[in-house]
Image 1: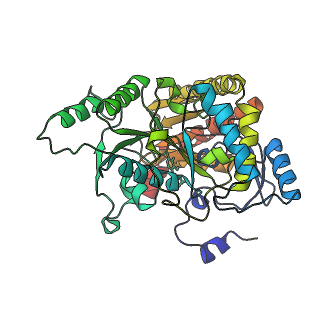
Image 2: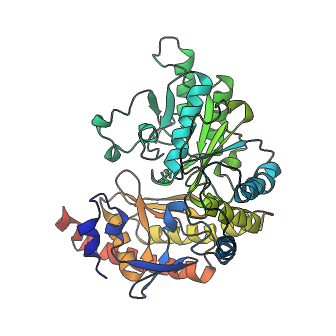
Image 3: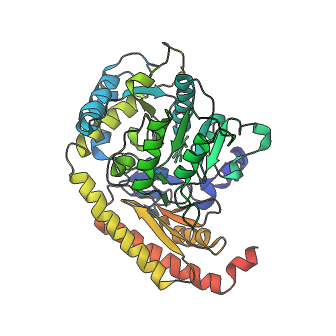
Length: 428
Ligand SMILES: Cc1ncc(COP(=O)(O)O)c(C=O)c1O
């Protein structure tokens, strides 16, 4: 088996294969093995889609039983036992205990489908076309979602997407005390600001791809209050940091807010493709079949997702575990930063999402490379790849976690030595 085959047959758009150039074969929990049986500890976690790890035994058992009894796989949006049980699990285990009343829309199976749907629904409900998003936001790559995504690398003027989107600074985007919610209020209340009242604001409570930027609960609350006051829908994009990543099931719970629309994907199907949009009852203005598609809902993801909701979310034990392990990661990240203050400028995160930032161009890419060489998968985030992002499965065991962090230590030390020896200058 030869990795060159991918270059020969697969589009140039290939991405992660370039950071992790080996052929992966099997995986369990937080470890992946390649075809040569080399193990890699997974701090990448399928970019947030593997919160429950690879091949969770409870998921595998439920899927095998379902497939063995010839449970229906593709049903478009017909009623099925699998969908019934998923809806019940979501309502009973997640929504009702939080006092949340949302209807669920099953959309095409990727996060960007959910974002696309949320934007369209908000525009239809409010009969307004403008949407506000934030600096460094990441919401996906279909054209509507791309329009609310910041990073210029993904944009091209030929796509024609910037229409009807206004960007505002995310919380703490500027070092000085500029609050973008105050700014938005000012715009909305000034009849000559040139700012249309938007249909919606779309926001991540932590920007994962944008570089692990954590908004404060106070900022989120203020944004939510302004939206309510000015009759603007608040869309929380929970695709990367929902599903327990921050310790709570929804990452915005720490702010005590109730968004009008929520997008969820990635780990909701335990890594199998599934995307959903939650909407308040009165926001559900769709006509039957008005927003449709073939792959709405994925029976196997329903089975797997319901199994994990029942398994992990019936009480707060899992949340406590996430916070406990997250603290271990934070301490180790801060130790790396203290050891190499010239190379790392910041550590930030919450729960089990952590980022360590470098102001040296390409340095985090070098650490990621060194980590891969040692058997650790870890990606970079941020507009320039200036942040190393920790996104391991939430179920990772303590021993494996420490082993991965030891590998990261070694990778960081090696990268510092190489940078000091001029390795990055040579690549410039
Ligand atoms: C916050 C957020 N929204 C949307 C998306 C897009 O999801 P997908 O890649 O499944 O289309 C992502 C993907 O990383 C994301 O992090």
